[in-house]
Image (tube, rainbow, N blue to C red; front, side, top):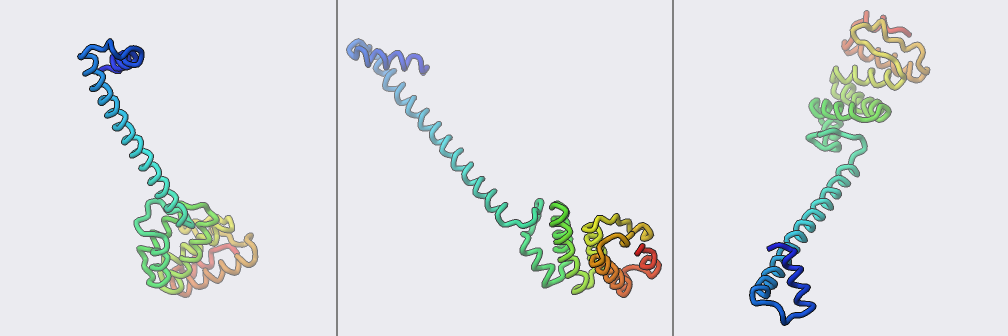
Length: 189
């Protein structure tokens, strides 16, 4: 039934209820039912839409309030990865954590990488973590790193405390046979 006919019928009824024909009275009853049904359908749809939007906002808030460092599509939550790295030396957890740090801003990335790579290197003797720590330390001091050519690594211009850290770390890498004596000697001091 068209809304125009319904409104004409309603206006006739309001102005002069005696002149409605039986056909118009039937239309009026069905028209009002039709109108009520449509209002109910649209009200339900609007209500569902509002509820779904509110639920989505709550989920977004929960996701964002738990993270210290942004993790893109991580399959395991941040705290679990940290515990696996700290207490089990889990290389897969370390790699996932490493990749998540690469998505964060540089200062958070280097500080966080230094913490967890040092744990994996010193406590669990993971060779890749030795390079990750050294890399983060040098990036923090704005030094360009090219492991294919150790001659290009220059730590002579970084602050003395960081320089001592870098030299100590290089010594550890040499002792653990992560790098060769030639690589160790070629770094500019």
